[in-house]
Image 1 (cartoon, rainbow, N blue to C red):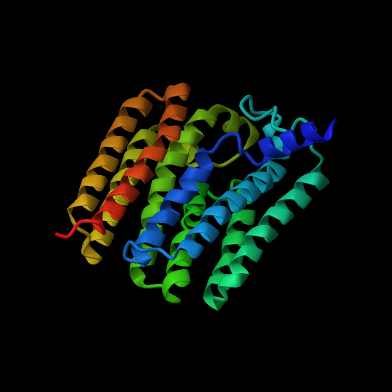
Image 2: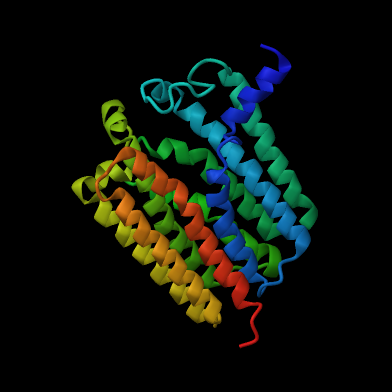
Length: 289
């Protein structure tokens, strides 16, 4: 394998060719950055977080594929992933994950923020342990929501050096959103996951999976509304929340018949839910009244 081919396999292992994961991690982080700074994020902090999102999502994908390397062979959608197919060795994967995580951590150090450094260690532990929760947690998607939402308290730590209760409320909203979109994702692989013994929310919810997804969307929107109310956000925020509700309603039409292709389409479409909420937050700080 040439060097170019090897780097191509690393790119696939990090899922850089599939940016939806970066976007789903980026949106809640951006919510936190804008809310914690009243719409005026420190641009150094913003760039550190932006690069950190890419690095940590990439590291998380590598760890996930390492953890699932024996399962992925038995799932149609994942059997050709670089690690499962043997095009990248287990040692290479571990070294790559370590380098990516270390790079993300080193970017935090120049900010000289002890609380942020402590939270970054916790975030790395969450990212590293999430793939293994599918062995024993009935709804590992909730754990994913915590991991993907940890940029929220980190944003408050970076800007204000403390974490108010509203930040954790926003994390909880993200947990419910993650449960919604990752259940849609899990609905795609339900039959394969049942065969190999992986636990997912789609399996746990069973025949109530569609109802559970919509309740999670509703809960996320409710908590986001409470956050907006507590922070006195202006009318564009509520417009953005209405747009996100429209996205959720559209997803019901996609997943109600449990068609695998349409469930995956709904999962990918969650980028617009996150964007709509962020657009509302950002615009709220731009209007005068």
